[in-house]
Image 1 (cartoon, rainbow, N blue to C red):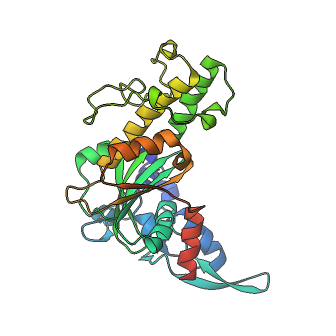
Image 2 (cartoon, rainbow, N blue to C red):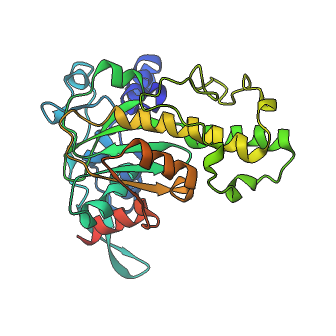
Length: 307
């Protein structure tokens, strides 16, 4: 994960700037620092420590031993449900101590769903979360963008992280420019089965877009757009290949003994007919539900404070 990894950030700071690090008394994630400014409490939150930090031992459910070996002391993590009374402008309120955004976004679904589920949150990042997979991460999963979060109930959430929302947008820009269409033309594309050159069941057919994986520059310049007769046809092909990568990411976090039957799609792509159609076809044993929950992250964080 590079410097997205908070543990690596702390390790880098200690090794490259030892004089400044020697003056550090506390290491906090930003939400806990923000909470500290209002509450004066120095605490750590399980959901942030358990989020791509390499600081949490998921087997022992405690801080990793490398922190102690490096002399790095972190505050004791406490429940995200913890609140403190704070007076602001003469009014007493409950002030939370912060919860990780992905962990927060799961909370409304935990409250509503009567069966195990997978949440596919789509936006700039496509984050696929399976709160019902307790298997340890494998090397293959780690090398392909998988990680574990901690839920607010301190349960492992096996997740697959894909930078697909941004990849979608920049490739749509290229197609839009080629066909000289309106920048929002893709929003008006309706599902047309005639344009769906769908891969076979085992996905043995090679992709047109991203045939060699996601390019480092995110735009697949190798695709000859002249092979498509229209913007709509090109966009259908882009979304077919986009959906296949999402499907592959989903497969990585579905265990052999899978108990999930429902997949919620939240965010911008839950309104994309091509995307939801293909996932429904390729996941015949699952119910694909376009989530109607709005602002699930903010809602989940509010639900924690009120619980």
